[in-house]
Length: 94
Image (tube, rainbow, N blue to C red; front, side, top):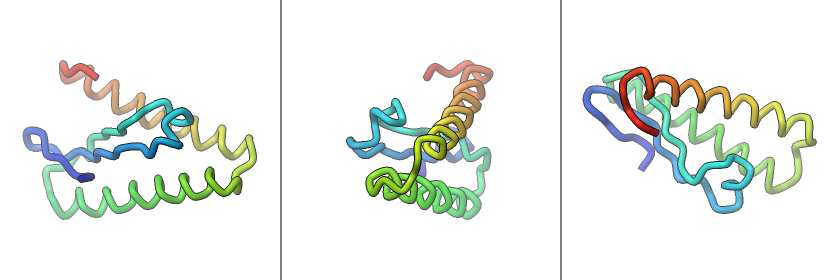
């Protein structure tokens, strides 16, 4: 299940494959899609899933050099931290 509705807002939820948990530092990813529209949320989820699956393939096959991997991880961490800050602003715990 990738799509979850909390209140009026849809969230992207993704269980990280075991072989990528150390790399990403998480067992599960959750991100607000900042929409209450199911169709918009479904479209966003497809994009996230595709990006994460592509990352997994690239990591597993060794197609990323260290610099590329570090850029991707930085982008991930910035995205996750933005999500975490959104939760804190709304009084939720991570």
